[in-house]
Image 1 (cartoon, rainbow, N blue to C red):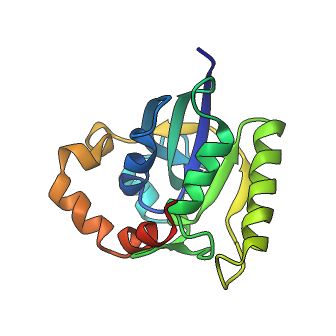
Image 2 (image 1 turned 90 degrees about the vertical axis):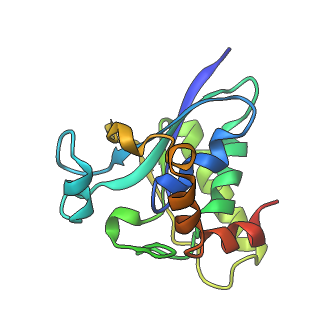
Length: 172
């Protein structure tokens, strides 16, 4: 097994777990915070928009089963790459779309994929998702983990805020 990690921010982390969690080769998907200046922030702190963090997911995967390229392709199908200031009903800097790369190989894959997506014509608006170096990742509180499993009705409400329709349209 070749264990690697990927970090993606694409709005509410509750909604970013399920699309990855259900794929072969995924070991874990953890909701958390990254990209900010406060050490070990809380959900309440991040929600203020003053810590600089994004809500994100850290995906641990078996690279012998699923590639980073495949994860990036899934990411484009579940997070709106044209909305720099949030995702769907979730607005603000802490919900901005970001691919955080762990090494130069991930960076090159993400940048090429973003370029290919921009050329594809799939979106009318520019692709604004940032591609940034990974920063410390802080696991969110336990009640945020596996939210779609623990709170299916609330999760369904979150999905109905636009993300569900986006996924239906863009999921391949």
